[in-house]
Image (tube, each protein chain N blue to C red):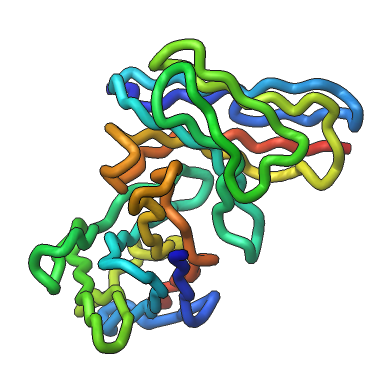
Length: 113
Length: 116
């Protein structure tokens, strides 16, 4: 049982570089989400997608972009990384946007120097 | 708009003692409420959820939570702490009610330590 797979698990990146965090789910869930987790701030929503072909902005979208070409994949791209984007990133999915319950990946730890 | 507040960023209990993690919510509509647990270097796992059925909700690992509308609370309890309960716990409220996004809004988390 795979659920949600995130890659890479950890990455150190120079400021100004482009980086894509990958997220793949095998549960055929319609809705997918990207959160960042920072000490003392909990989890904050970056972007979301209610269904393939649609995306929306969350609480902290600046500096990030997403795409949802199909049901299974939801990559998160940092076009030009900055140190404030150092964080742990979690991808999550839900059967549909009304379901509430989210299923999480194991996270990607990103350090921007 | 929905929000949650977790009281206490860090709670420490002795093994065998009662665990009480506090969560208060704000919602203009009947909320769906959740507790998640995060073990070190892992993603979040659902402990339990309230979706307007029974007000006392039982979850995994002996945890339960009671929805109290009059107090706008959804506190998490466990009668007897075990060393394996040491983790960070997040309360969350569903952001969906006719809105465009169906994500969860999370509290800032409470780290539970269990002393032998």
